[in-house]
Image 1 (cartoon, helix red, strand yellow):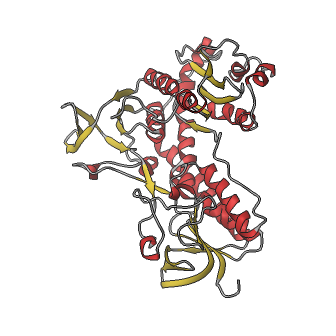
Image 2 (cartoon, helix red, strand yellow; image 1 turned 90 degrees about the horizontal axis):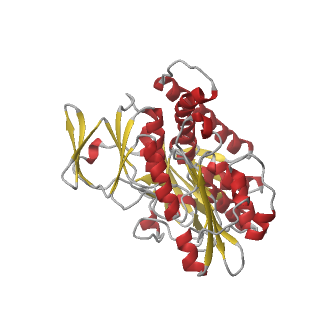
Image 3 (cartoon, helix red, strand yellow; image 1 turned 30 degrees about the horizontal axis):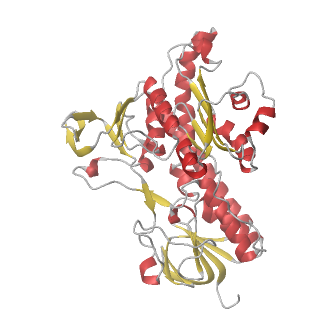
Length: 454
């Protein structure tokens, strides 16, 4: 090890990179981490955390309206957009500092500059006073993903999700192009904050890859909030006009907006890393090819998280980092499992899911039983809201194991996280039936579903 400047050089200060660096340093490894932007990566700075904070803010608007049904008389609320932005920025700055402190406490050397792979054991970093090279026994690539905008006339007028948190002024009319979780979340957030949102998706239904019933149910509930949801709607060009921006649609129509968000997918953040010259194999989409141990085509170079485009979820990157560090500097016993990974979509209402969709379960297991219920939650019996919730279980008929659990409703992520433990442990429908519910809660519906819907 003494022949190298460090035992592990990490390129990328996001969730996966920071976790790997910290855990390796705690095991006695000499670690260097390079990051050119704010510490914490997409999740902390322009992803999960600020998006959830804005989602909370948007939910207050609905809560103010619903309060009247519970006897509260309130003055008309008004959003102070600059104050919300300032509060969010202060919290993100605090988190940036915490990430840095965590690295400092474990002895990780942080380098602020753009890093590039030279070969399997050499990294070059562009610093303010010139370039410097480090030799490393192992190199970890954890540079995450970046928004992608297709080539079309007027693409210079659009924004990506990275730019949505500091808009000035607040958009009165917002057009969101895309149908994935990022598009749907931002559409819900800004609709709740007071924008008139039009969500344009060229597919037949939003949230491709999720359970079909969940997709249709969530779309219907989102439309209840006043959002203009347009399916099979393509955009051919965007023009600036005296009134704002004009989107030319594939059907010949036009949509006017003040701001246009393109949330049409993310791609691996690999530009400028020197991968091709160093000999690191990539897929056509740029994703770094790795084996089951996160090793690239260069035996000493590893990659994890969104840059490998396996599952673009922060907790997945964290789990992969823990497994890799144990492999390199521990006993090699820790494994990352990719089955029954729970996830949430912070639309309004929220979506929570773990396991197989009904469609995927039928392909995997053949005969399945589906238990589902949609209903008005107790809260909305007085609130005046027409919002409904959906709970759904997909059960493998042969084993009685619950292989899919889905929810559309308030705090769906919080509810599904708990059930994910049972799913990972292999809980059967009989176990669900034998579990006593907490009454009155929405979550108890999962243990009171008795009659199969199909």
